[in-house]
Image 1: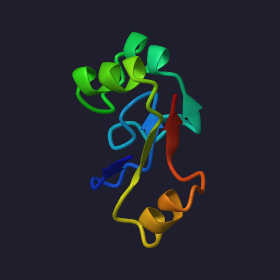
Image 2: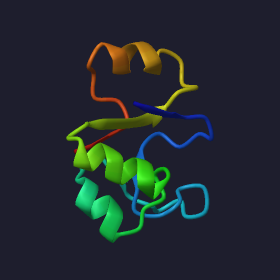
Image 3: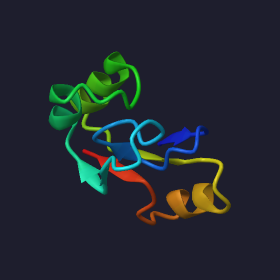
Length: 81
């Protein structure tokens, strides 16, 4: 899990703070994150998760109840697989 604290609630095709028309992904592959150079987190961490078959959930940590929902397996944010 990767909780964000900047008001971004998942993985987008562009920075939603700069482009209000940015499109949020409900699910995306590690390969697509890498090929699109989406700055989800450090590319070394992304490739580590990919190489070790670890799913990654990117969500807004500061939104009320999101951490609990994510831990309970609800589809909050974006799933990277």
